Amino acid sequence: MEKFIRSISEIKEDIQPTKLILFTDSKKLMEILSDEITDIEFIVTTSKPPLTKLLEKGNVQIRKLNYPPEIGINVLTQAKDIMLTCIAEGLVDNSDRILFVISTDVDTILFFDVHNMGIANLKDKVGSRIDIKVLESTFNIGSHIVREGKEGIPTGALFILGDVNNVLRYTRDSIKDPLQGYNKSELNITDRSNWKTIKEFSMMDGAFVVDEEGFPRSAGRYVMFKEDINDTVEEGFGGRHLAAASVTRNTRAIAVVVSSEGPIRIYKDGEKIYDVKSV
Image (cartoon, rainbow, N blue to C red; front, top):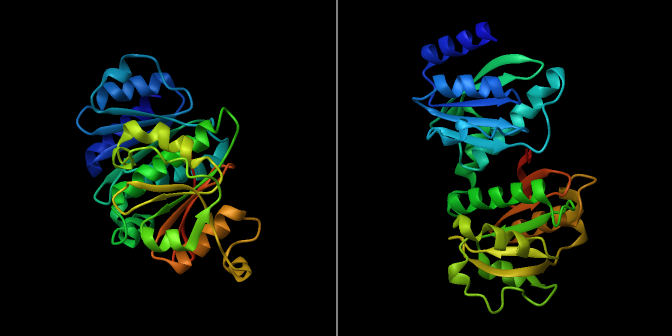
């Protein structure tokens, strides 16, 4: 481990990253690196979060994973999903240079210049239609749904963001709107204190509709779509994906589909533009 830690320090000094992401379940490595990495943001992704002084360090964020590290080279796919999730949740932005350290049964060090990653363009694709903070918050809530489910049972959700007037014309109530009686101006999706409430509403039948600035407009909406929309959705995808493709084809909205199996997918103009397994 000492040689690996020296390599991390030498590479960090050489490439000058803006953030370091550590993917490991080794508490010893977490603690050693947290003592050494004090000048940049340090994001620890692990299925076994430590209950130590590590949590008190101002530059350290802990992100708990649903699943333990994969075995062998498969861990690289898991690392990819971690990186994409961090981008979508706003933990990493377009200007970041990321030193990504993996220590499982495989020890390796990766470097990402986020500006040169195609996925960073996601924000450019949707930014003109909705506030990017609305998308990041929606993705965060979706990640919580994947990790926690509904009373421990895996479930999914469909969020429709923006172009609200057209979306409401293209959808109808599937249940009595559960938002009736709530002061919607106090339920902005970008306010973290509202996430638990919004999470519960979004897991009900139908879509959860949010305006461009993050204020909820309706819940439990049924999306009306024609059969030919099946041609644009991959085989095996369910009703939420059909609804997302349909509503975004016919409006300027962005749709976020949270699958009970784990993936979160984003649709624009009837097409899937983002697909990552939330971790």
